[in-house]
Image 1: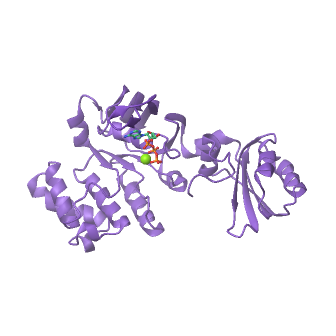
Image 2: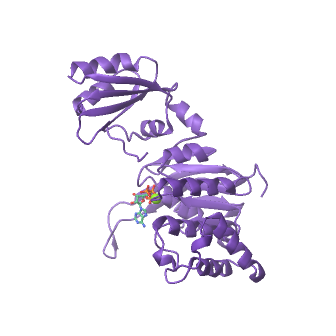
Length: 337
Ligand SMILES: Nc1ncnc2c1ncn2[C@@H]1O[C@H](COP(=O)(O)OP(=O)(O)OP(=O)(O)O)[C@@H](O)[C@H]1O
Ligand SMILES: [Mg+2]
């Protein structure tokens, strides 16, 4: 598949789940994915972001032929996920992470040899491919150890190597850096970055800095629907003309004060983070126009919270996310940085 073609496409893709009580369906279905349209150009990294339960994993599982859509269509590398499962699987590598999917009692190298054979890598190429991936993921020096003894970060690297074992042209990664320490996350991001433009990558993440760094385009999904889709810069622009304000105050403003700021003209989202001893609080305000501080500062002072510092900055992807998904409405950063 050459660069510029569409590697992943979804048209009105939907999936419902019925709540069960025992063996029986009970109540109305939950719409986990609601008419999602996607068009991902080959050779790019595409990020799917959204709060917990937004529908990211469900979308990915449908694209990976692991879940049947309730309605709509999708294709990967030009093959329909419902009717050409085998062709899709040959061209697609998937990392779903977690503790499942690897054999703990055997070594990393034997796991990869096994999956290489399973995925049809020619016998004379298996060893070369396995060693190449062990080097790429930084596991070469621990390859003979049993996977059950690996740390979470190391297991995640084996998962990534496994996803790449058959040299797929499209790679889907569900929260690839979850639980990794900062060093390991940086290394894994570098590996992901090195996959393009030869491959196409679709990833989900809660780390908005990661999406900002890695992704060419981002879709924000909330309640099963795509609510924004653009480049990281475009997503930030959607939220306003680059206006974001950070006000540090003494003390810990309550919900009434934050609500008063939220009601001010032009304010889109307010989120407050207090220190452990609540002696000072950083309030982040995102919105339109240049006069946010003219409204917010007097409110804070009037409510008895001395202002220590006011800092204007460009909108971060995190602030854009909070503003678009409404996760900042309760004054608490709902997304890990
Ligand atoms: N097998 C299932 N049975 C019933 N409901 C499900 C099932 N899988 C997912 N759901 C529901 O579908 C919705 C979307 O879940 P999904 O796992 O896709 O979210 P997510 O965006 O990946 O969230 P997270 O960030 O927490 O991983 C949730 O309401 C979830 O409870
Ligand atoms: Mg998920």
